Structures are given as C-alpha cells and as structure tokens.
Length: 467
Image (cartoon, rainbow, N blue to C red):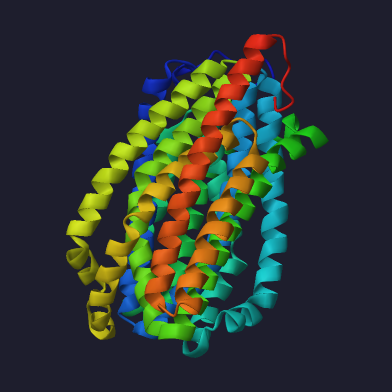
C-alpha cells in the first residue's frame, strides 16, 4: 500500500456520513468491548475476593495505579484517534499514516520508561497509600502488571488506530479476546494452579498479550486496514507529536486525577473505617463502572464523528452530533440508575462468599448512594470526548480539574473529615461534587459550540490550527 490514498471503504463512508447513523453504529461495538472489559475487571474482583478482604483491598490499592497505566494507553490512543480522524476528514491520507506510526513509537518509549519507574517506586507509593496488611499482596500483583505494562498500552493504542478509521468491529474482537481469556484464566491460575493474587496478575498480562498478537497481525502483517501503518511512512514531525500530546497529556492527566481521587478516597476510608471500607468501596465501584459502559461507547463514537466533521470544517455537524449523543447518554444513564438502585442487594451478593460475606450490606449501601454519580459521568465524559475530538485537550483537562479536584475531593474531605461523617461523607462528597462538575462540563461545551459556529459563519475561510 502506498501513500496514494486508497478508495474509501464502508467504515470511512460511515464515519463521514450521517452523524446519527455513525454514532449508533460506532457506539455499540465499543459498548460490547467495554462490557467485556468491565466483566473481566469484575471477574478479577470476584475471584480475588475468595482470597479474603486483604486480597480485595490489595486490588483496591493497586487499581488506581493500574488505571494510570490504562490511562496512558487511552491517552495516546485518544490523541492518535483524534488527530488521525481529523486528517481523514481533511482528506490528508499521508499525515494520517504518519500520525499512526508516531503513536506507536510513543507507545514503546513510554512503556519502557514507565515500567522501570513503577517497579522502583511501587513499595513507597503503596505504603504512602496506607496499604498496611495488604501491602505484600499489592506488591505481588503490582510488580507483574506494571513491569509488563507495554501489553496494556499497546493494545489501547492499536485499537484506537482501528477506531480512528471507523473499524470498531475488529477493535471489539481484539478486546473480546482479552476479556474472555482473562475470565477463563483467572480461576485456573488463582486457585487451580494455586498462584493466589499473582495468578490474577498473570491472567491479565497473558490475555492482553494474546490480544496484542492479534492486533499486530491485522495492522502490521495482514495490512488490510485503510491506513498503512508501516515504518516506511514514518517521517518525524514535531507538529504531529504536539498534536498527539495535545490530547494525550490532558487525557492522561485526567485519568491520573481520577486515580488520585481513588487513592485519596481510600486513604480517608482507611483512616475513618479501615480496610473493610476500602474493600467495599472497591467492589461497589466495579459495579458502578458497569453503568459507564454505554457512556464510554457513545463518547468514543462522538470523538471520532466530531473529529472527522471538525477536520472537514462541518461545525454544525459537530454540534448536532454532541446533542444527539448527550440525549442517548441521558436515556441510558437513567435506565442504569434504576437497575442498579433496585437490584443493588443482588449485585452485592456477587462478592458475598468466603471471608468477604460480611461486605454485602456495605456494598449495597454504597451502590445506592453512588447511582446519582452516574449522571455526572454522562455529562462529564461525553463533553470531554467532544473537546478531545476537536483537539481541545487542555479544555477537557481544565473541566476535569474543576469537576474532580474542586468538586469531588474538597467535598469528600469536607463531609468525611471536617463534618465527621466518615465513610458516608466520602460517598456523598464524591457524588455531589461530580454532579456539580457535570453541569459545568455541559455548560462549557454548549458555549464552545455556539462560539465555534458563530466564528465560522463570520469567516468561513478561517484555517484552524488543530488540523
């Protein structure tokens, strides 16, 4: 395949066509993918819960750190997805190829450096987090997943490259490989092979590695993608690195912020209620994250559709795509809130076995408090994806800081530590702060779109620096 642009396939035509059809067709494979990811994350917690509360707490302490790793892959992928799709919308096939290769080079460099740093500083980080009696288990799990983080980051970036050209079905298949293998390997390696919490870590690494092999075959060997992701198309350009990092760094920092919030929340829970509260909160969050599945699917679809429309200077389409996605998101959020609230006791029983049986009532209460928080995820996540799609990563980050740091952290600390509400103060503070931040995100997005369209109508020949 050469640098001469090939004929646009059905995926590209979908991406550039009607926004309603594109969002629906691009979103559902991503929803399936995210459901599978959440399912194997949930499976990890369920199987690890059988090892006792300390083991489940160990997952709770390492999860925020692991999410940083996933966030790095997601961030690089989001930056590549946004910039590649904007180039496709602007009919710049050569630069789309070059951007894809740049993103993979960044993947290798960051993965190697990140693995070294995490393995060196992991013990000190966990001690500072208050891991206590679960420290050794957290280290056993962390050294494995952080030392081999390249498999997680590469899979995130490679699937983002497929997504940038509208190939969401193969992205779904790659993620399905990871999820199904992990769910199968978890009980085998944890209990049958007697590896304990190390088995959960190895199961995650092995399943992601197999998925990476599938992606390598499609993208680099079979080469039947719209883009030609070959190193021969790599021509270093600072502008491309800047374009990727303009989205990647804010996206990574956003995930880092959410991880810090989890770490801070765990610290407050340990101080006021002990590791049992951390274990319960970890389990409840895994279930609340299920409600995030349709929102991530819709938001990711919006990112691609908005980026393509933005690259083609179709700003009215960007606005319509955002409004349509938001409506779908609110409908799905309401359905998930009702289901989780009503069936919270049944969901909590997933963790009610072995030495974790006493956690079920606590998990039920936490789920019901946090259900309202899902609305903040809807407003915040979809708005963030809009800004990432149009290349405004800094704006997305600033909104996240307002929502997370100013809202969730301060209110959680106020209710928990100052008013003395303990663990319930953490849950209520996070929920209220997130909801306030979600409405700020919504208002900011609407004002931005109005200004964008107004400026374009005033000067249709304007050249945007984000393309």
